[in-house]
Amino acid sequence: MNDLKEEEETEADSEIEIQPKLKVQRLNKPIKTWTDINSQMCCLSYESALLELASLNVPPTCSKYQARITNRPSKSGTAMKILWVCENGHNIYQWCSQAKFKYMNIGDFLLSTYTVLTGNNYAKVELLLKQMGIGCVNKATFYKIQALYICPEVENFWKNGVKDTLLKYKDGNPLVVIGDGRNDSPGHCAQYCVYTIMEHDSHDILAQEIIDKREAELKSPNMERLGFERALKHLADEKVPIAEVVTDAHIQIAATMRKDHPDKKHALDVWHGGKLYGKAISEAASKKKNKDLLLWTKNLVNHFWYCCEHANGDARKIEKGLHASLKHIADVHVWPTGNCAHMKLIGYDGNGDEKWEDSRSEDEMNDPDRPYLSKGSPAVHALQEVIQQARFMKKFPMYSNFRHTGSLESYHNVILMYASKRQIFGFEGFKTRHRLAALDWMVNKGREQRLTKDGKEMWHKKYNKNTNSWYVEPTKVDKSYDHLAVLVSNIMVSRINDDMSMQRRITINIDNPKLLAPTIAKTTAPDKNVLIEGKISRSRFSTDKDKD
Image (cartoon, rainbow, N blue to C red; front, side, top):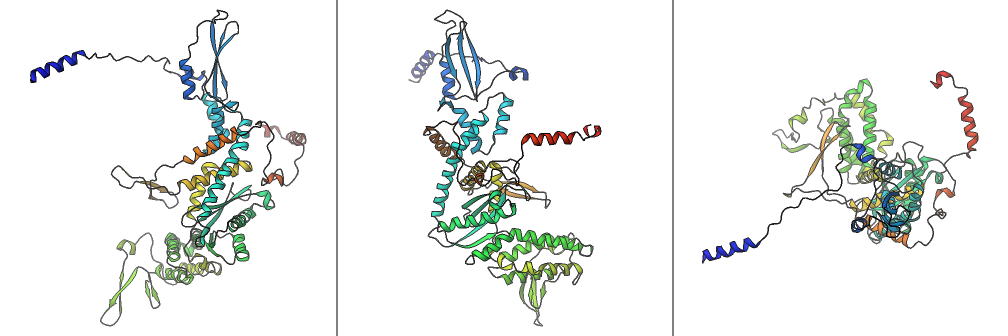
């Protein structure tokens, strides 16, 4: 039986024909030098267009004139067109690498859309495409698409999202919110300020106000206060209860809180407080007699954070903890009225004296890079003066709840992807890019830590050049940009439903500061010819040496 079965299998195998492996013929010649590709046109194409091209069967001669047919490629924005023409000028076929979308190439429209939505700008994208030999959407067309479709749809998407966010907090307990402003450029020459208010625990963005210099009497330092006032008013109008507001030590905002919001507690950001404390210590240590205090700066700032964290709303604990540091740096850890936190009372000896245990390691107690100071030395006295500054002690109640705006600082890093401080934007474009940054933050703020195949948490190393030390951060899962697909769909629908020409004059929105003044200039611009004449007349007085 087994022999019979083997014979049947052998006969079945003999009936199977083994097809020879076909070698695929490549139509494109391999590129060997830059000149082989530099002269060729490049384009953006879609799958459907390429399949259409592959199925075309163009005859070698024209059926009407019996003349030879040639093809003529040409650029059309980011697309490429191929026109088949006979020698007598008769057009046979025309193919385009992209489909039309309301009288324009779909690639041109989507390139404009995604340039804005992904935080890029026209100048960089146009340069990239130009160097690759790809055509680009016209600059005027790009800004028309941005003004007519992208900016309005992003604004609507943002407003609907923040409205849903605020609904979560309307009927709940009063919130602790954090706020901070960000200028579009450093120094006192900024044109825009964006003030953002975020919920302290969830890090949800609740309000975002964009202020133009023209709205603040052309004074950049006033923009942050104005943005703060508008953001709080917006939350009040939306009936969002607020118990505590956390900001940096902005003088104008502190005055506004005292005057207009006495019912809300005003807290200061501990990070900024620690920074100012460290700066004051460094200034005191800059004197020769206090130079040994500089070695303790980092530890003293860390101790300030510790005191604020364990104050639990009691400012006296911060004051007591900072005064304890005066004992610690002088190698005194137990005194009649208190002790350092690292000391633990473990009992009493036979004479009734207290016995203490030090929880520090030997290396911590005898660190050669940070020697203890002499009790009553000028350095210790200098630190005491820093701690007892009236202006500093007055702020202890504002640090006692241990609030900080670290999440807002992280959000400001996200903004850099969409609105670099090195790039100048118009008001609408600037606002749109900050809305996109806020949407990015809201979608990705809660990303989980990435895991290995074995389920272990992943970390990556980073170097801090300020502290000259290494540290690790959790490696997060990749960001999600699924919300961009919804935005693009809305933008396309807006274009489809628009029956008017894109060449129409764009109406300025009512909140655009251009209605206040055309520019931020304090004087009216003179005629250009007058400026040119002035430049030429000044150059006449330059010497030959200056020209060289």
